Each structure stands twice: as C-alpha cells, then as structure tokens.
Length: 116
Length: 110
Image (tube, rainbow over all chains, first blue to last red; front, side, top):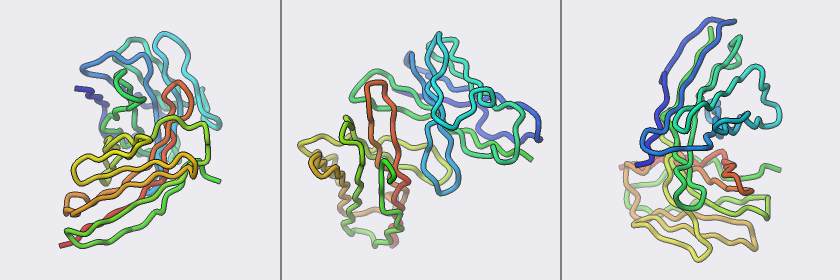
C-alpha cells in the first residue's frame, strides 16, 4: 500500500515552454500532497503544500505564478513549471500522507526536468 | 543555522561493520522524527520512524534525545545494499511539513 506515482519520470524541454508534472496516490486518498525539488547532492526542499479543493501553500521564496499547483481530486496533484529556464532543471518529487502513523509521507519516484 | 544538520560523510565501511549517523535539529517544537534512505537519483524511502524510547528494526536502531535535540541511527552488520544516502527528517507543526537534512552518504565495500 501507500503507492505514489509521478509522470513523466523524465522530461527535456526548451527554455520558455511549460511543463506539467502529475502526482497520483494510487491506493489511498490524499487531501494533502507535497512538492519538493532537489538539486544534485543537496537536500530536498519543500516548494509547496497542495491542498485538495483549495489553493496551495507555497514556501518562502517559491514563486506561485511560476510553479502552478492544482489539486483537483483526492488522488491527483499537478505541478506546472511555467516559462521554464535552465535554472529550473532539477529533480521534482511529490509526496503524500496516507493518514497512517505519525506524519509519514510516501514519495513518488520523481521527475527529472532538464531545460535546454 | 540549518534546521536539520547531518554530517555529509561519506562513511566508507567494510561489510559487517557497525556504523552510526547523527543528526541535530534546531526547532524544539519538532514533533516527529524519521530516517529516510535515498539511493542515487531515486526518491527517498522511509526507513523508520524514531520514537522517544528508541526503536529497533532488524539491524537498524534509532534513538532520539529531545533534551539535546539529537537523533541517531545505528546500522549493525552492514551490507553492500546499505550503501545509500541517509536522510534525517523532522516534522514541525500539525500539517505534516517535513524538514530534511542534507543526508549522510554511506558506502559499504566488500
């Protein structure tokens, strides 16, 4: 149980284009999902908390107009990187809490974004 | 000061060795504590939660010292497959926000 999927696993896009990443909880419902990014050899940094049916909560320094989050159902959250630039190239990972145990989160396999 | 601090390593140990990782956290209001494991270019996976009384799962033992704001992970009888980055993770607040340490790299060699 507690499986989270992400799609795509890898994407290469040109500067200025937008990229959508999907995060799905496959065997549980998640009212809250989380989006992280990780640069090489660095820690995961929380970007935003995605709340089903309401606006996402963004961490300080994360541009909400650049990283659009939509959590339209209890099993799907999407992150859209708008007008991507090479510095947006990173490993984007989502997570969700299945509601069991002390705030345990289960992570999707991640999406590696390369902006050329 | 970082919210969660870990020694980045790497720790290079032979198979069968015992190795310990330490972690400190700055927010005394932290409520829950975890060790995650992350393999290269993969997502983090929960290794174990850390309870106040300390807890053990097979070869892995986790300890928490709230007074010192210190968490540890002990791995006994290291296996080659234990090679990974170990992330110390802390939950602050009531809505599941996790704060990650930068990780400690472990390399187990034959």
